[in-house]
Length: 153
Image (tube, rainbow, N blue to C red; front, side, top):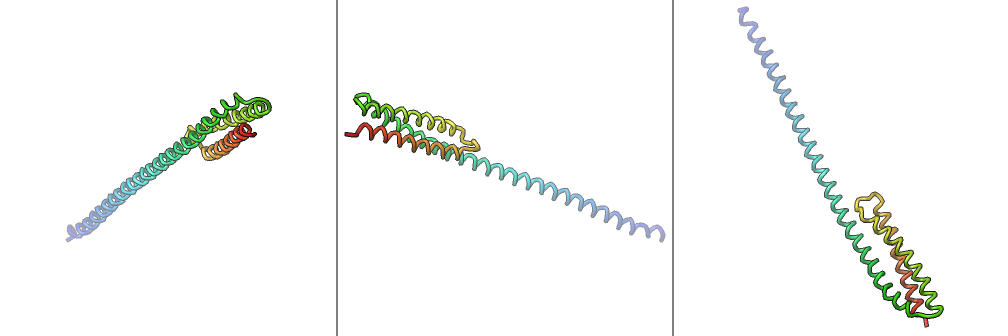
């Protein structure tokens, strides 16, 4: 009987070893599953960030285009007013020339700010946009000053 007494103990030890090995495999499997889930989450997060960046770039391009159109419209209007100023005489001509000089200084600043908006991902893009909008408002006021000067009777 002594022969058989060791067998049940051996069977229990083998069963325990198999259980530990299986548990180790399950743990390894769950670790692999966790890593796969983490990779999936990371990929989804990166895709969401890329989508957000693309949307932001598109919005920035649209805003820049709008600002550029505003500036172009101001320049067209002033081109007409410059022609009108060329035929003016006396104090009207002097005042118109001064207003045109002021206008050109403001346009130069607005163009400088507008060119900085070309980089849609720049960290200070929103602040630059605000400055550009303020510059365009100043350009518009300078434009109106030229027009007032030339329409005075």
